[in-house]
Length: 491
Image (cartoon, rainbow, N blue to C red; front, side):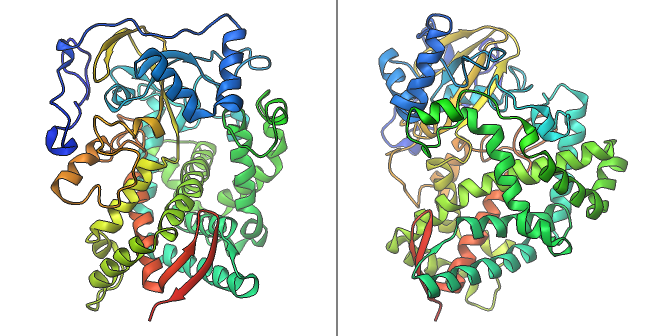
């Protein structure tokens, strides 16, 4: 675990062998103590002004970058949406931490509390989860956190027996749909078919249920999850689906009630209740959860964490590959070399594909599926960036914007460039210590004592399997993150 300045500090940035031109980083004791710059502005006016910048005038990237430039610091005070007028119980004040070194403090459970801070100080109504505080909202010091986290990890362990089979089976259906759409229309908008594929795969893998037992769920379950997810995060997310000021007025001004989706969510609940008996009994008998706790937490892991994360990440990954013919040629060569000697695609063979894995890691760095991470100071402590140390007070909310953190030039060479080979070899593997996308570093280990994504390794493995499967099917593919225009079948 990380410690405060009085003992040990968060993991320092890499040595010059990783960044090629960066000098060795000074220890925190050598850095100057600095007052955290920035301010929250006048009550109501300051948060509202920051909200309009964040959603309307600047957008998240420019919002954080301009303030970092203004204060000449990657640590500063500002406000984060949602804010006034209909979020009176939400405190928008945050301390932004925008470099790898300061960001790493968000995962030291001795220093920070993760209670009810999934989306900052704003928490959607618990009625979205049957009135329960599901595991993601619990701090590690709460006894139920360990039970739920261990339940999630056991679910993943059980799923590993069918994970690959179910993934490839559902990919067969997905790519068949894509090919059919290309044949009929000359191109295929693939996001919805991909989401349907992900939903069916996750139901079979994480709950042991074939969606075909319920035609209604098979047809509409993934649509329900889309609405359920959107209603929770809309107040905090720039969508760009409506012209301003309509988006501000209609989407960012109030929290949406769970009643809008309650009926359809109940159908998903009943589907799991009636069909996932082995997994539910595991939660009850092995981890001491009630039946309701087991089902709602299983739905959250499956729907919010896995389905929601894959729905954002996989189009970014596919779009990155389909837009680069040279990269495709290199990936195809590696995949077929590894699988070409009679070996089928499996966990062992995909782990031999260095380039495939590196492309997955680099996509996670470049386009992290969860852009914001939050944590509340458990006590007074000192936080260090690359060049300064700052005093943080107990109860203050820290916020890391991952797209900027993962472009930290003190850690990543040419950080604004997508480098497919970045994580290959000894030097590349060392960089995984600083790849944060899963509520912790890629080299971290999820446990009941931390908040790192229980499925961290399954996510990268699954994405690598999808890429490898693609190039066993096709010689080439053209498209972007929303549509596929053509595929050339493998010869």
